[in-house]
Image (cartoon, rainbow, N blue to C red):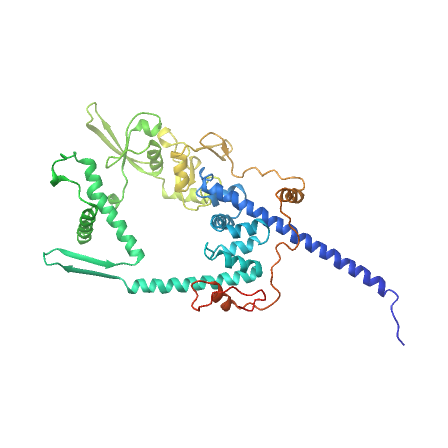
Amino acid sequence: METRSPNLLTTLQPTSQRTAELDRLGDEIAELSAHLDAATARLLDLIREFDARGGWNTGFRSCAAWLAWRVGLAPGAARERVRVARALGTLPALAEALARGELSYAKVRALTRVATPETEARLLAVGRAGTAVHVERIVRGWRQVDRQAEARETARQHAGRALHVYQDEDGTVVLRGRLTPDVGALLLRALDAARETLYQRRRANEVSPPASDPATEAPTRPQQQADALALLAETALHHALDPGAPGERYQVVVHVDAAVLADPEQLGQSVLDDGPHVPAGTSRRLACDASRVVMRHDEDGRVVEIGARTRTIPPGLRRALQHRDRTCRFPGCTVRFGQGHHVRHWAQGGPTKLSNLALLCRRHHRAVHEEGYQIERLPEGALQFRRPDGRPLPDVPSPATVPADPVEALRARHAAEGLRLHARTGLAGWLGERLDVGWAIDVLHPRATRNVRSLPSPDGRGP
């Protein structure tokens, strides 16, 4: 005997209603995601402009470091935002697809790792047709082809390296060669340095010869290159000669008047040992943790007294400073290795004590001494940094103002801009077929080994 549950119809109705509610919820998620992607495109536009105009250069090492401080992004995420923002500056089609919510940020982020203006159109088709997982797999395959092509090119260059040296009939030596890019760059840098040593510095110290004397005319650039190569050869042959004790060989010596060291506004000298002038702030920075020799002069400039003193931070105190501060104390900086900075300079009576020291990386040590940034220790022991104009630079910036309903504000803004975003705006064209990465790379990549150049058909099965 067949029986039916009297509650069957009543149980089916709520299930259908529940399914419809979940569909609406899913559509709302998809629509809001499209709005977020469109807003991300605008954010990347702003980051690219801010980066290009150097807005981050207010004591920060990079635009990514500024983003980590001002917006609260993790350093890795901040660097990735800046990378994608820069890349989209040369990829207008991908940038527009993101701005219209048609591609997710995840897809665009992956595509910008390999896309160029020449390959942008075909990779945009990949982004629209596939899911984020498909895009990542295509990009990995694409980069593998790039690495293989680069390896082949590097091997070809390495195998083709050569230097031919022979003596001509008149006794001169002729050189002809081909170097790999890295060795070539090294040689060019060395020639530039040798040429500068031979001619630019010499020219600065010589009196100009009469214009009518051809024997004293400046040599041509090829002649200078030849002389520079001779200097490099001589230096290489004589490299074993002892130029001095290692401790003295690598010292940077600055001559600075005591008055200038105490107050950069005072008149006096601040010069390197070989003569060039350096700013007083540079002298103060170098003297923060350095040995010093005090020389007293009479009215005629003769040295009448010499005394060696030191203001280097002792090893034990340096370890305590590193343990206490851990990283550079400049707001937003996370560099772990730094230099000891006297909050109150010792030339002004500041002691070399832990309470008067702060750990600063090289970049921010320079910012404090030479770019106008100020640092002081507050009565409770905290450090206060100020910009060159005197405004405080807080460790954590004030949060941005957010509307009471940010989602509706975002929708209203996009509606005002003419964007019509809905649940299917960013939907991929994938119909569930299997992705053949090898075939896809052969079709898409211009450096692929097979001679296939057409784009995939809509069903994904090839041309």
